[in-house]
Image (cartoon, rainbow, N blue to C red; front, side, top):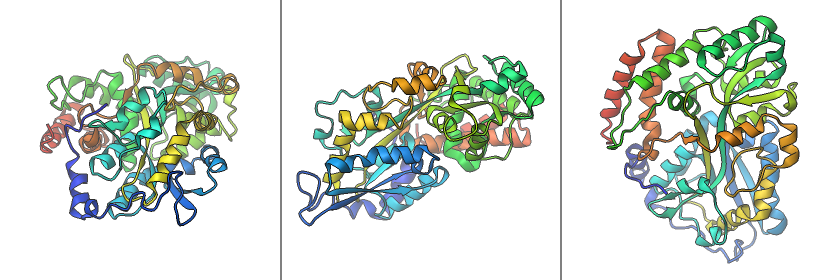
Length: 425
């Protein structure tokens, strides 16, 4: 459970400034107890960037559409938004009193929407009798449940075993070994040595990915007194480590993450650091066979991060009862099993086990399950709704280090000043 000790002031101010928080109140109007309405069938719109994922998007959509078999009066309709545009488009839509009935969002955006009053409380009946696991904890803010877990995707290092074996490269356990092995694969096979997000244009994705480097080097973005600690030796070490890989001529500089994943999928990449969802996408539908895709712990001393995705019901939805009916089905044994078959090893809201056939066919999967035991949220404790706001100056500082060769400590001092000026502590 999380408290909103530090509200997201900018997003909330925008929402309040537009008056949208005062325009709501139509939730569930006219809905009957089964989720339909007295006026006839209901259409629920579900937004998710994953609907656009090659193969996985189709499987996830097919998994949720099974809901309609037992609820013929409720039709699901998808709103597909590219990952890089998702936060801006959803906040714009919902800030204007529009958007989906159910938003499926990364943890940071979920907090921002809840904090701005753009999500409604989930009905108690949705979770009654359901044994939720720890993924459910951050769906509760100030003792009110605003969301249920969709998927939790842990990060690991992944590699193409065929390329690594051809190069005679070792599976690295340190950043120095990662560079050496990536260079070895590149020299022996002509493939890209290593891929990873590195573009500020993909801020949300890069920020979450970089938390692995930060946590791996011992970074704590907040101290025991709740003060934000940006300019630290640990953060400087994380910057320097990422810079060393960036400068090693093993990364396709300028390529966005979809392009890099497609390269991996086609057997053209040796190593990457990715989450289980992205890895599931890489291992399906390309030249690289799932049986040749392997994983290992991150090449850092400390555990890494996970991405957590939640479902929440929009304050602007006129079909809140139907939305709660869908969430109830999703948490049922039928719903969780249906989602499991499309989710690979991702942790779900309940402890439904990974399909044995999937685990046998995908040797990369067990490592992700093991790493989930100690992974950390990408959000800053106590500043969950403000994490993006805090991390923006940090990632801009890292970009200056990468592109201009600036000194990590100097740029982190600048970032600390910019964060302090936000007056969030």
